[in-house]
Length: 302
Image 1 (cartoon, one colour):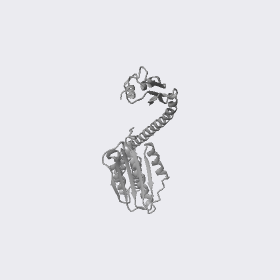
Image 2: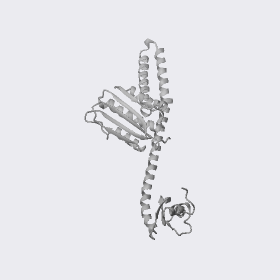
Image 3: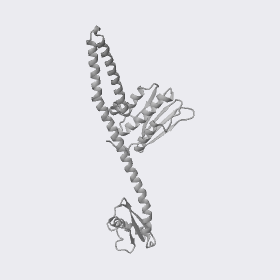
Image 4: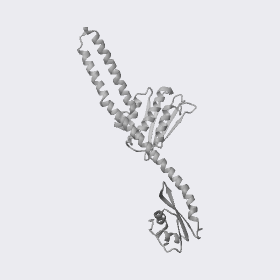
């Protein structure tokens, strides 16, 4: 219902001050006023809801009896409570959006570092390894120290290449960026010492959501490999009610500590996206690590 220029609400919005209207007022005819009269209202009073110094809305009370003279000021006491609640909600929304932008920016920085490592240092090391192999092949059998030095340099270069590749994977794997959550988790599962069953959606999600889900799964599987003494694990992810839900289960000895540094870091990251982390360790063994990541509210890309 559109607000007429002569109805009570626009008057309060224009002036930013309380106002009242009685049935006999000359300007009580507007659409809102007419509707109120048809419902039997004889008197109305409105007070602005002021949030951060600006009129956010209006609260209006109507009555079939004449309202008390001070009613608009009494309504004002209630609208102050409403304004406080609205301001708190607004502040929380802005804080969540800010923290989400920080997470997205951090993920983008990780991607940049991975690209720089791959295109820069890693490529140089690969060329170094190739050059050393060529030099090793060109050496004569009787070159003695030269051959052993080249072999040692080749070994160091190969180790450095492997360590750099592992470092880049730990920051943000290329498979995640190229193929999405499913590809990233498949790469994780392939390196696990126990079989891992996967149920991951194929559709792509915003990068920040995929990265967060990946880190949850990676931390849970790392704990399975290091501490759980499990025979198997299962990873599932699905979208439900605009939320990505992730579960990692294992059949190990349990005992995961929800307050551990790794899980606490995940909890902080999830809270930045207005998400939640849940860790369950039943007495009969096994561990469940579950996360819920809202998609609509946290899908902010850098």
